[in-house]
Image (cartoon, rainbow, N blue to C red; front, side, top):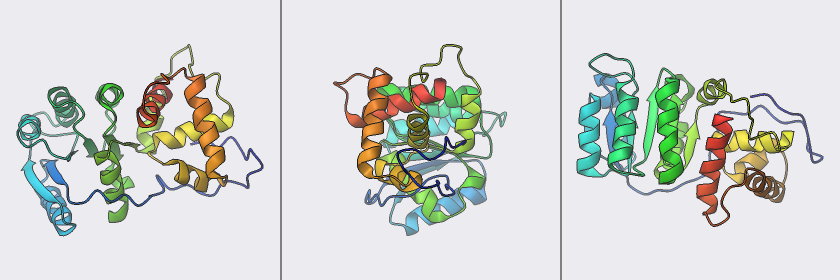
Amino acid sequence: MTSAGPVDGAAERPEATPWDPDVIDTGPMRVVIADDAVLLREGLIRLLTECGHEVVAAVGDGDALVEAVVTHRPDISVVDVRMPPSHTDEGLRAAVEARRRVPGTPILVLSQYVEVSYADDLLDTAGGAGGGIGYLLKDRVAAIDEFLDALARVATGGTVLDPEVISQLLVRRRRDDPLAALTPREREVLALMAEGRSNTAIARVLVVSDGAVEKHVRNIFTKLDLPPDATTHHRRVLAVLTHLRA
């Protein structure tokens, strides 16, 4: 992500990690895992179980994922993109179908690939169902704590996107840019919101006060003409979707 340079009297921005974790305690969660790689699937089961969560289903194809979500209504599902039979985008298509069948069910896509078309379809479901979407590349999750942080954010209705996913989605820009009214700093704040960062985490990255970030976020909501009667959380999701489609 390109920095617009220091604003508001801030110091030079430090190197940014994919996200800056805040402490989110969800308590024990009920999880569905969908991945046809047995070793990875078993590793996730062991990790989540050791962390106090319950894996209610572990499946290896898209149809089984949809069935597991409908049956168990988990707190979150962890889904790979490429699964049988064609090993292309079955996981993402199944995630979209699961969100259609169980609106708002949290989905964290964990993959080696960015499938732009179905990633966009999955994000479409976030606007009406209140978030609960994540898409991370496996090689970005370098530490268990980062994976667990992303899992908690998505389970609590957040939207967490890998910077590479954001980059590829932004390639599909429209001629009429809805972000034209935003200042460079507001665009930067919005980009960090898209990575799943809270206001406090954004303030740490940009080296500004929490109050300054809150002001930028309010300005973003106003300039993007987001409905004032929606919750702050829902408006954050809508703002992120506008950013990705700009």
